[in-house]
Image (tube, rainbow, N blue to C red; front, side, top):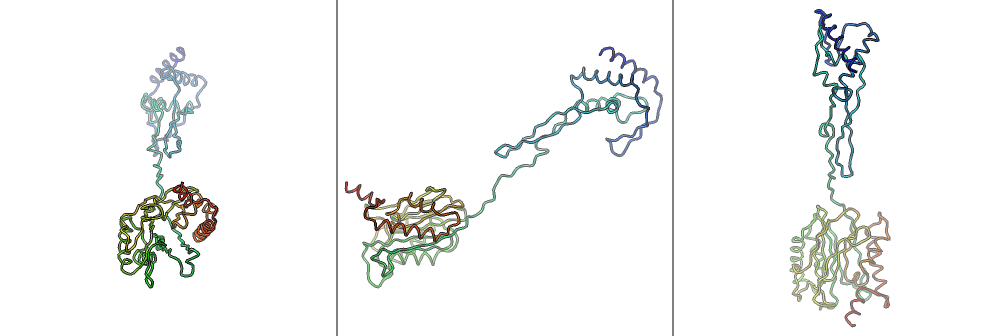
Length: 367
């Protein structure tokens, strides 16, 4: 190597002495392209000269020149994107190597272009910010679309006059009112449960309601029922807002369930004074809508919401309801599901040997 370096230095000195004032090379429009006057093909000894220079730079900088680099990207599961720079070795011909040494715009007397020389050894990297666009992983919010159905099956002894249970579904709000059988009733007056249901159906709009709005509407409906209706009723009213949050008010032993993926995701809490005496609304009752329990739960597409009276939940456990709902496919209609739940609860209520939520509590009380 030292011999080649010495030979290269001697030849360089000779080249400097032998050059005159030649014409300046013509510059092309594109800076990266240079037109030069044709030169004879290098002889074998000139290749030795080139190799000598290559060895000189390799010895000085510890590696041959590298001209290009590229950026690659890798994506993680969290959608973060990072850039990784890869060094690639330059494929440099003899003529290209000399252009780097002497410069692309040299005069007839060559000058050592250090800047261009260093570029041959520089690895150019590209940061992630230069090449990678920001990934937006924010899903567009969509309000869930609702399908509702109401099903009533009066007690066998009350079929002739329609029973005491009523309900409604308007827009994004629905409710169930379970008339209290033991409450005193005046003949010729509307039942308290029907009065509340009718008033709520007329007053509320199609938009979702807050718990406060549900409570206020229920209070107004109660005041009207106190003057015009008879009897008493429990009540559970729920509304699914445009923010996909279910808000419910429960007064008594009716229930509102939110089912998701075959399990109970949320549930209202019953409220009673003592066994078989739930909180209730009526002219003679001290209970008010503001005394009820409340529930707020986020709702997702595919959720099933079941609101029912104690006629359902005294006979069917939460697991029973989950099984019934799970027996349907994803395209089942709300009316089909509601009917099957009501029919099943009726069958169980007529089975004197069936173990039910109500019978379990009753046996527990009797010891």
